[in-house]
Length: 285
Image (cartoon, rainbow, N blue to C red; front, side, top):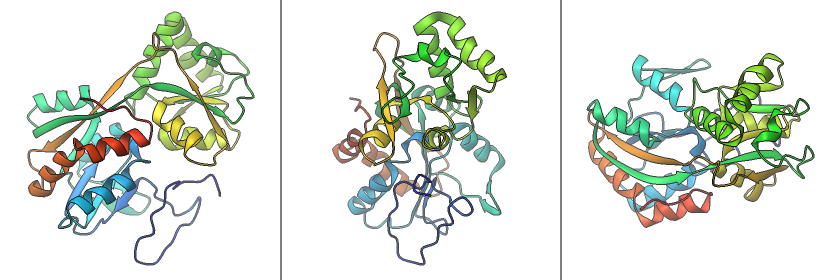
């Protein structure tokens, strides 16, 4: 129970209810009913969102009811296409005012005319999340090929980080390493493909189901430096690492255009930059 999300809980007014392992929706933040602003975030930013939203509301007090999601971007794209997301027996049919994603994804959507405005706001790189003390002695991505190492790996079908990690495998030891981890070890069940990587990988490591998982640096930083979770971080050399830039896009058909405009302005403010930096992200100019 102590390792189950949510890992960052704000005490809102109302009846508190969490049933660990039964009723727990950690990637859904704020007011579902009649929101003033709806933001779909990249899932790995879950640790930033509570503080970020509170800071936005403090700077923009007329927008009190804010709803945000932090689920895999591939799932959010399907949600936007279908018009609804089904979580257990709950249906969320809100339309976003702002979405965030990797810069390439936002640029592609912008070319299709989805946005009235876009902005880059943070960057990231890869690292390896391991158990506290690194008992498997993981030094780099090549060690994930070892048959004794159980790997938690994102499924590229759901999350853009999957392609970035595969590129880092290839930078480290060619396509052979990528195939060994993504094909051979998947077939032997020593690589586990996640669907909600930013939640499943730390949980699998804490519950001794996996030994290591390549993740965004900010995720490993958060768990190893900002919580008491039994997790450590293994950094990667710059020459094999892969960078990412995150962008925000204001939807052209945003239901709350004024709030969306205010949020886009806030995302490039110094306050937002400081919050992202606090959680292990890198600022962009």
